[in-house]
Image (spheres, rainbow, N blue to C red):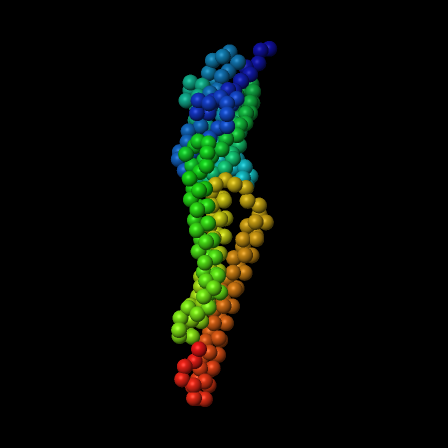
Length: 238
């Protein structure tokens, strides 16, 4: 008995599977189109049902899972999807009829414009990261290079400690920007790296609290030293 076996030919955005790497744009509605051809060479019938699953390879999660594709009744099936994250995706389609069940898979990348090359966001977040690192370095070393930032000893102490507090805060901000930027560019970031950034951030916050508390005590100590200096007949402390 002749079986009505369905052979599937996947044509996504008019590109064959044997072509170069496939790209889709990020943040835009993308129509995935599949052409279903039966054994006789004609289009698949209205009785054929096709589902699609899309896996985000960077973390193994499903963007969609076993969702029905729309049958245009001319052999074509389509599914609209929006990719929110950059990176690699795996697409799996499964078409069923009364006589067969055929599955096909392929892979594609999602970039900002849907073309090969560096994402503009990748360059932007890298530039911001480098800028914050430079500012952080300047704020950290400036009080060491110029220990006298103001003639008033209280103002000088507050300015020096403020530079270090802001530098530490910028370090935590930079870690958050790097984590966010890496996830958006599609680069693979290990769980251990996120844990390191989390610990790094908390260590910085602890140091910020320590510096603020120490500054308060040092200001009180400085106040007492100046008061004692004046009681002994001194006129100009510092």
